[in-house]
Image (tube, rainbow over all chains, first blue to last red; front, side, top):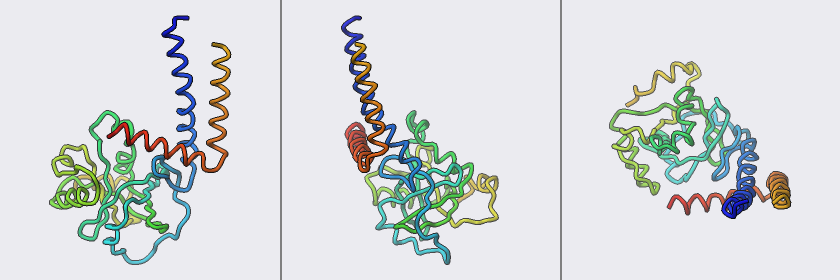
Length: 188
Length: 42
């Protein structure tokens, strides 16, 4: 066997061990109650389910991340969150990049079916994700994101489609998946 | 090379089982992976 082929085989063989560790850790987390810092998790099952009046979301300014789970598919991930005018917003960047299109699947899933569950400080809230594509509030959201996180979020980035912004609105039981999809682009 | 493949196969199996069953190992793997991603992306 050629010496270079031997070296390549040895390198790939050795690399297989840490790769296995990462894949196994990700697979294990996928069935857990919620995500960890890196890997997505399974359905959010623990924690009190909030019921009552719409919370005062201003406390989110002190919350670094939340756990977000879509109902379909029932997978959860840990993401950044911002509050503007008393409403909760989440977002996904790198949507125009090659890796973003492969890696970021939840935004498209949220547009198809926005029903979601978020868990903040151990309390679960039933919500509806609605993509925001127009309106002056996007300027405020971009400013809030940049002020809270080391992010280069701007209105131009949002308008380019590289950053998808969602309002984490109250769940309306009457809103069907199709109806929620129709809301895309109609928010201000 | 045959012995090498056997050792790698054994290491892969042991690694997978360790990460899945031994408490804390998956968290350690996640931490290291996060560090690697941060270094690569910075």
